[in-house]
Image 1: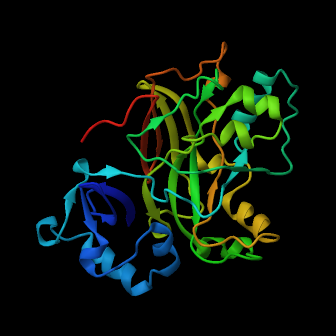
Image 2 (image 1 turned 90 degrees about the vertical axis):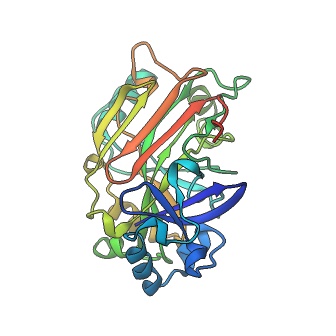
Length: 303
Protein backbone atom coordinates (compact mmCIF):
# COMPACT_ATOMS: atom_id res chain seq x y z
CA UNK A 1 0.00 0.00 0.00
CA UNK A 2 0.90 3.62 -0.40
CA UNK A 3 -0.16 6.13 2.25
CA UNK A 4 -0.27 9.80 1.33
CA UNK A 5 -0.74 13.16 3.02
CA UNK A 6 -2.50 15.47 0.59
CA UNK A 7 -4.34 18.75 0.29
CA UNK A 8 -7.62 19.22 -1.51
CA UNK A 9 -9.80 22.33 -1.37
CA UNK A 10 -7.36 23.82 1.17
CA UNK A 11 -7.89 20.93 3.59
CA UNK A 12 -5.18 18.47 4.64
CA UNK A 13 -6.14 14.80 4.46
CA UNK A 14 -4.69 11.31 4.79
CA UNK A 15 -5.35 8.77 2.09
CA UNK A 16 -4.36 5.54 0.43
CA UNK A 17 -3.36 5.41 -3.23
CA UNK A 18 -5.35 2.99 -5.36
CA UNK A 19 -3.48 0.15 -6.99
CA UNK A 20 -2.89 1.81 -10.34
CA UNK A 21 -1.65 4.99 -8.66
CA UNK A 22 -4.20 7.34 -10.18
CA UNK A 23 -6.68 7.94 -7.33
CA UNK A 24 -6.54 8.82 -3.65
CA UNK A 25 -9.07 7.28 -1.27
CA UNK A 26 -9.52 9.33 1.92
CA UNK A 27 -9.18 7.41 5.16
CA UNK A 28 -11.97 9.37 6.81
CA UNK A 29 -14.47 7.89 4.33
CA UNK A 30 -13.59 4.52 5.89
CA UNK A 31 -14.18 5.78 9.45
CA UNK A 32 -10.47 6.05 10.20
CA UNK A 33 -10.03 9.29 12.08
CA UNK A 34 -6.25 9.64 12.05
CA UNK A 35 -5.33 13.32 11.90
CA UNK A 36 -1.68 12.90 10.88
CA UNK A 37 0.56 10.25 9.38
CA UNK A 38 2.34 10.06 12.72
CA UNK A 39 -0.94 9.10 14.41
CA UNK A 40 -1.56 6.51 11.71
CA UNK A 41 1.87 4.93 12.10
CA UNK A 42 1.44 4.72 15.86
CA UNK A 43 -2.12 3.48 15.88
CA UNK A 44 -3.13 1.58 12.75
CA UNK A 45 -4.26 -1.99 13.38
CA UNK A 46 -3.74 -5.07 11.25
CA UNK A 47 -7.47 -5.23 10.53
CA UNK A 48 -7.40 -1.62 9.30
CA UNK A 49 -4.43 -2.43 7.06
CA UNK A 50 -6.32 -5.38 5.61
CA UNK A 51 -9.37 -3.22 4.97
CA UNK A 52 -7.29 -0.56 3.21
CA UNK A 53 -5.53 -3.19 1.13
CA UNK A 54 -8.92 -4.42 -0.05
CA UNK A 55 -10.32 -0.92 -0.62
CA UNK A 56 -7.29 0.17 -2.67
CA UNK A 57 -8.33 -2.34 -5.31
CA UNK A 58 -11.90 -1.07 -5.62
CA UNK A 59 -13.46 1.17 -8.28
CA UNK A 60 -12.89 4.83 -7.31
CA UNK A 61 -16.46 5.74 -8.11
CA UNK A 62 -17.55 3.50 -5.24
CA UNK A 63 -15.38 5.32 -2.68
CA UNK A 64 -16.83 8.42 -1.05
CA UNK A 65 -14.55 11.42 -1.44
CA UNK A 66 -12.10 9.72 -3.82
CA UNK A 67 -10.06 12.25 -5.81
CA UNK A 68 -7.83 11.89 -8.86
CA UNK A 69 -4.24 12.05 -7.66
CA UNK A 70 -3.41 14.71 -10.26
CA UNK A 71 -6.01 17.05 -8.72
CA UNK A 72 -4.53 16.89 -5.22
CA UNK A 73 -1.46 18.60 -3.82
CA UNK A 74 0.79 15.86 -2.48
CA UNK A 75 2.45 17.00 0.71
CA UNK A 76 5.36 15.31 2.43
CA UNK A 77 3.92 12.12 3.96
CA UNK A 78 5.20 13.27 7.38
CA UNK A 79 5.30 17.07 7.07
CA UNK A 80 6.39 17.63 10.68
CA UNK A 81 8.51 14.73 11.93
CA UNK A 82 8.47 14.41 15.72
CA UNK A 83 12.27 14.27 15.68
CA UNK A 84 15.04 15.31 13.30
CA UNK A 85 15.72 12.92 10.44
CA UNK A 86 18.60 10.51 11.12
CA UNK A 87 20.92 10.47 8.11
CA UNK A 88 23.76 8.31 6.86
CA UNK A 89 26.71 10.07 5.25
CA UNK A 90 29.06 8.55 2.67
CA UNK A 91 27.14 5.24 2.50
CA UNK A 92 27.84 4.28 -1.13
CA UNK A 93 31.45 3.56 -2.11
CA UNK A 94 31.30 5.52 -5.37
CA UNK A 95 29.94 8.56 -3.51
CA UNK A 96 32.71 8.24 -0.93
CA UNK A 97 35.22 8.40 -3.78
CA UNK A 98 33.67 11.48 -5.42
CA UNK A 99 33.39 13.20 -2.03
CA UNK A 100 37.09 12.65 -1.40
CA UNK A 101 37.93 14.08 -4.85
CA UNK A 102 35.85 17.20 -4.19
CA UNK A 103 37.56 17.74 -0.83
CA UNK A 104 40.97 16.93 -2.38
CA UNK A 105 41.48 14.20 0.19
CA UNK A 106 43.14 10.83 -0.18
CA UNK A 107 40.66 7.94 -0.13
CA UNK A 108 41.81 4.56 1.13
CA UNK A 109 38.67 2.66 0.15
CA UNK A 110 37.68 1.73 3.69
CA UNK A 111 34.67 2.84 5.70
CA UNK A 112 34.64 0.54 8.76
CA UNK A 113 32.03 2.58 10.64
CA UNK A 114 28.81 4.28 9.57
CA UNK A 115 28.66 8.09 9.49
CA UNK A 116 25.54 9.37 11.27
CA UNK A 117 24.20 12.91 11.46
CA UNK A 118 20.85 14.58 12.01
CA UNK A 119 18.92 16.79 9.62
CA UNK A 120 16.80 19.58 11.06
CA UNK A 121 13.27 19.54 9.63
CA UNK A 122 10.97 22.41 10.56
CA UNK A 123 8.68 21.28 7.75
CA UNK A 124 9.29 18.66 5.08
CA UNK A 125 7.99 19.58 1.64
CA UNK A 126 6.22 17.43 -0.92
CA UNK A 127 6.56 16.70 -4.60
CA UNK A 128 5.81 19.75 -6.74
CA UNK A 129 7.10 22.14 -4.09
CA UNK A 130 10.07 24.45 -4.30
CA UNK A 131 13.57 24.21 -2.86
CA UNK A 132 14.51 27.66 -1.52
CA UNK A 133 17.93 28.69 -2.76
CA UNK A 134 18.88 30.68 0.38
CA UNK A 135 21.05 32.73 -1.96
CA UNK A 136 22.18 34.98 0.89
CA UNK A 137 23.84 31.94 2.49
CA UNK A 138 24.35 29.35 -0.24
CA UNK A 139 26.38 29.40 -3.45
CA UNK A 140 26.67 25.63 -3.92
CA UNK A 141 23.23 24.04 -3.56
CA UNK A 142 23.32 20.29 -4.14
CA UNK A 143 20.86 17.40 -4.44
CA UNK A 144 21.04 13.87 -2.97
CA UNK A 145 18.50 11.16 -3.79
CA UNK A 146 18.07 8.81 -0.83
CA UNK A 147 15.95 5.88 0.32
CA UNK A 148 14.36 6.70 3.68
CA UNK A 149 13.19 4.07 6.16
CA UNK A 150 10.30 4.78 8.53
CA UNK A 151 10.15 2.94 11.83
CA UNK A 152 6.76 1.45 12.71
CA UNK A 153 7.09 0.62 16.43
CA UNK A 154 9.42 1.14 19.36
CA UNK A 155 12.78 -0.30 18.33
CA UNK A 156 15.30 -0.99 21.08
CA UNK A 157 18.10 -3.57 20.93
CA UNK A 158 16.79 -5.00 17.65
CA UNK A 159 18.90 -7.82 16.19
CA UNK A 160 19.61 -7.87 12.46
CA UNK A 161 17.30 -10.86 12.02
CA UNK A 162 14.30 -8.91 13.37
CA UNK A 163 14.83 -5.48 11.79
CA UNK A 164 12.33 -5.94 8.94
CA UNK A 165 9.54 -6.40 11.49
CA UNK A 166 10.12 -2.88 12.82
CA UNK A 167 9.85 -1.07 9.48
CA UNK A 168 6.57 0.64 8.64
CA UNK A 169 7.57 1.66 5.14
CA UNK A 170 9.82 3.61 2.81
CA UNK A 171 9.83 6.97 1.09
CA UNK A 172 12.14 9.13 -1.05
CA UNK A 173 14.15 12.02 0.39
CA UNK A 174 16.22 14.64 -1.39
CA UNK A 175 18.89 15.46 1.18
CA UNK A 176 19.44 19.00 -0.10
CA UNK A 177 22.85 20.28 0.94
CA UNK A 178 24.82 23.53 1.05
CA UNK A 179 28.40 22.34 0.50
CA UNK A 180 30.28 25.42 1.72
CA UNK A 181 28.27 25.52 4.94
CA UNK A 182 28.97 21.82 5.44
CA UNK A 183 32.72 22.37 5.12
CA UNK A 184 32.81 25.63 7.06
CA UNK A 185 31.04 24.32 10.13
CA UNK A 186 32.53 20.80 10.02
CA UNK A 187 29.38 19.31 11.53
CA UNK A 188 26.69 19.06 8.81
CA UNK A 189 23.66 20.20 10.81
CA UNK A 190 23.50 23.74 9.42
CA UNK A 191 24.50 22.94 5.84
CA UNK A 192 21.83 20.26 5.53
CA UNK A 193 19.15 21.64 7.86
CA UNK A 194 18.10 24.95 6.29
CA UNK A 195 14.38 25.51 5.82
CA UNK A 196 13.07 23.67 2.77
CA UNK A 197 16.03 21.29 2.58
CA UNK A 198 13.97 18.11 3.15
CA UNK A 199 11.76 17.31 0.16
CA UNK A 200 10.10 13.97 0.95
CA UNK A 201 7.56 11.75 -0.77
CA UNK A 202 5.59 11.36 -2.81
CA UNK A 203 4.09 8.90 -0.28
CA UNK A 204 5.02 6.06 2.05
CA UNK A 205 5.18 2.62 0.46
CA UNK A 206 4.51 0.03 3.16
CA UNK A 207 7.21 -2.47 4.00
CA UNK A 208 5.20 -5.48 2.82
CA UNK A 209 5.52 -4.23 -0.78
CA UNK A 210 9.33 -4.21 -0.74
CA UNK A 211 11.51 -7.31 -0.44
CA UNK A 212 14.00 -7.05 2.42
CA UNK A 213 16.70 -5.93 2.23
CA UNK A 214 15.65 -3.52 -0.52
CA UNK A 215 17.51 -3.84 -3.81
CA UNK A 216 15.94 -0.97 -5.71
CA UNK A 217 17.12 1.24 -8.55
CA UNK A 218 17.75 4.77 -7.27
CA UNK A 219 18.32 7.78 -9.50
CA UNK A 220 18.14 11.52 -9.84
CA UNK A 221 17.71 13.83 -12.80
CA UNK A 222 18.25 17.58 -13.14
CA UNK A 223 16.29 19.20 -15.96
CA UNK A 224 15.80 15.73 -17.44
CA UNK A 225 19.53 14.86 -17.41
CA UNK A 226 20.38 11.66 -15.53
CA UNK A 227 22.81 12.48 -12.73
CA UNK A 228 22.63 9.60 -10.26
CA UNK A 229 21.96 5.97 -11.09
CA UNK A 230 22.63 3.15 -8.65
CA UNK A 231 20.93 0.50 -6.52
CA UNK A 232 20.14 0.43 -2.81
CA UNK A 233 21.76 -3.02 -2.62
CA UNK A 234 25.09 -1.12 -2.72
CA UNK A 235 24.64 0.53 0.67
CA UNK A 236 27.91 0.13 2.55
CA UNK A 237 26.07 -0.16 5.87
CA UNK A 238 22.77 -1.91 5.18
CA UNK A 239 19.41 -1.08 6.71
CA UNK A 240 19.47 -4.07 9.05
CA UNK A 241 22.92 -3.11 10.37
CA UNK A 242 21.93 0.57 10.69
CA UNK A 243 18.88 -0.18 12.81
CA UNK A 244 20.64 -2.83 14.88
CA UNK A 245 23.44 -0.40 15.71
CA UNK A 246 21.28 2.65 16.38
CA UNK A 247 18.78 0.72 18.48
CA UNK A 248 21.57 -0.66 20.66
CA UNK A 249 21.79 2.74 22.32
CA UNK A 250 18.76 4.72 21.11
CA UNK A 251 15.08 3.90 21.40
CA UNK A 252 13.87 4.49 17.84
CA UNK A 253 10.29 5.68 18.15
CA UNK A 254 7.44 5.04 15.70
CA UNK A 255 7.69 7.56 12.87
CA UNK A 256 11.48 7.84 13.11
CA UNK A 257 12.87 8.60 9.64
CA UNK A 258 16.28 7.27 8.61
CA UNK A 259 17.77 8.51 5.32
CA UNK A 260 20.23 5.85 4.21
CA UNK A 261 22.68 7.88 2.10
CA UNK A 262 23.10 8.93 -1.50
CA UNK A 263 24.96 7.33 -4.43
CA UNK A 264 27.50 8.98 -6.73
CA UNK A 265 26.47 11.66 -9.21
CA UNK A 266 25.72 14.62 -6.96
CA UNK A 267 26.67 18.09 -8.14
CA UNK A 268 29.93 18.25 -6.21
CA UNK A 269 31.08 15.03 -7.91
CA UNK A 270 31.41 16.68 -11.33
CA UNK A 271 34.58 18.36 -12.60
CA UNK A 272 33.95 21.22 -12.41
CA UNK A 273 31.16 20.89 -9.82
CA UNK A 274 27.65 21.20 -11.23
CA UNK A 275 25.52 22.73 -8.51
CA UNK A 276 21.80 23.51 -8.69
CA UNK A 277 20.64 26.85 -10.06
CA UNK A 278 17.42 28.81 -9.87
CA UNK A 279 14.80 27.14 -12.04
CA UNK A 280 16.41 23.69 -12.03
CA UNK A 281 13.93 20.81 -11.80
CA UNK A 282 15.26 17.99 -9.62
CA UNK A 283 13.70 14.52 -9.78
CA UNK A 284 14.64 11.83 -7.26
CA UNK A 285 13.28 8.36 -8.00
CA UNK A 286 13.38 4.96 -6.34
CA UNK A 287 12.02 1.83 -7.97
CA UNK A 288 8.75 0.70 -6.39
CA UNK A 289 8.58 3.77 -4.14
CA UNK A 290 8.02 6.77 -6.40
CA UNK A 291 9.44 10.03 -7.75
CA UNK A 292 9.96 13.31 -5.91
CA UNK A 293 10.02 16.33 -8.21
CA UNK A 294 11.00 19.76 -6.90
CA UNK A 295 12.07 23.04 -8.48
CA UNK A 296 14.77 25.31 -7.09
CA UNK A 297 13.23 28.60 -5.96
CA UNK A 298 10.17 28.32 -8.21
CA UNK A 299 6.72 28.53 -6.72
CA UNK A 300 4.52 25.47 -6.35
CA UNK A 301 2.46 25.14 -9.52
CA UNK A 302 -1.17 26.14 -9.22
CA UNK A 303 -3.64 23.27 -9.36
